[in-house]
Amino acid sequence: MARPRAAFSIAVDLVILTIRQGTLSVLLVERGHEPFTGRPALPGGFVLEGEDLLEAAERELREETGLRGVAPHLEQLHTYARPDRDPRGRIASVAYLAVLPDLPRPVAGSDAADAQWAPGDTSGLAFDHDTILADALERARQRLENTPLAAAFCDDEFTIGDLRAVYEAVWGVALDPGNFHRKVTGLAGFVVPSGRTRYSTTGRPAALYRSGGATTLIPPLSRPTP
Amino acid sequence: MARPRAAFSIAVDLVILTIRQGTLSVLLVERGHEPFTGRPALPGGFVLEGEDLLEAAERELREETGLRGVAPHLEQLHTYARPDRDPRGRIASVAYLAVLPDLPRPVAGSDAADAQWAPGDTSGLAFDHDTILADALERARQRLENTPLAAAFCDDEFTIGDLRAVYEAVWGVALDPGNFHRKVTGLAGFVVPSGRTRYSTTGRPAALYRSGGATTLIPPLSRPTP
DNA sequence: GCAAAAGTGTTGCTTATACACCCATGT
DNA sequence: ACATGGGTGTATAAGCAACACTTTTGC
Image (tube, each protein chain N blue to C red):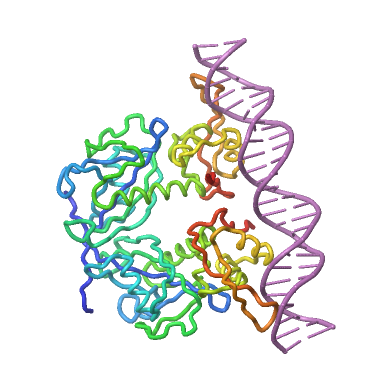
């Protein structure tokens, strides 16, 4: 073999998404060390000995958000390993997409006290994290079409209106409330009624639903084509 | 830090698909060394110093197939890094999906003389390659719905019938020739007529097409739901 | 009553499916 | 002539977008 094989560290970087006040938001940390000191970056960390990628991602997610016992959506996206992507050496980054409901106390008990929610379209991040974030958003938009991912943005119980707000925030479009309601409740396994009702300060009370067991939506909820 | 970060080698493993005699086929090599000596495995190799993942995948593809100057579909799929997946140590595998037309001389000039085409549903592979192969096939099936991937299975010029044969082989279903023809030629950017015609030993000559520039098919070609 | 959000009905259009049928070639 | 795959026509069914309309709450 002419050239030797490269020796890597592997980092797991998380794109943690939620909806806050109707806008798609991503959790960013401010870097405390070189390189890119002071720049915002995706939360992440190295894969440790004996650890699988998903375990590392779950650990980082707990450390950054202080979540306990929650089982949010966590999905591997893509691996980035350009030789020059990190000046410290050969570090591959395995990107994960995490989706959470809007937390009451957002980032409490966090390992990274400097973690902040930022708009989804933020740029100027450290390393190649702009690319990773853009790829993750595109994946999330696509996942809304074919999977019940939107429910992961909501609490355990949610209304069809909540769900529609997720689609509108992530896709950046307005959807017809009536047609959306019919489509979603008609799709087998997407949502199941919980039997309860939510009273809001205004308007008619809405029936509450839980996530159904489906893993793929057939037919898909297709994004409007402008 | 309690536990140290793990030190990895990174391998690129290729799921190289084509259609041979109407059946979806995958290129496998027989392992010549420990571990798993003699077992079939996906072709692959280590990422070398200074090399990006895609470069490594392209290099492996050339080495295994002897291709020159061809630009086949090559797409990163998923990264596998379970601590026990390789007895030699911590080796992460980044899986790539490659799609080729059925080559006249299949694996000529190959670095691995033991490379063989096997049916797509083969199992009993070394390492976790059964899992990787299954994931890759599922991805390929999905890509046919939303992208012009099927054209990558065909030569530069192809007939609509060729394209339909790809869908039928990968999806494992029979499609209506007439409706398929209309759908495909009606989709913007999927195929463009080359103006030429292919005469076959039987039946009416078929118009030839080239791949159009589209990257996503809207609307998608949805798989029949049985 | 009025505003607001939830949910239902209706209508007209677009699209898909099934399948009949014609087309152009080799044998 | 006939077999074979290519391609078009067409009728029926299904799906979808637009939007009017009813329901049920808070104020």
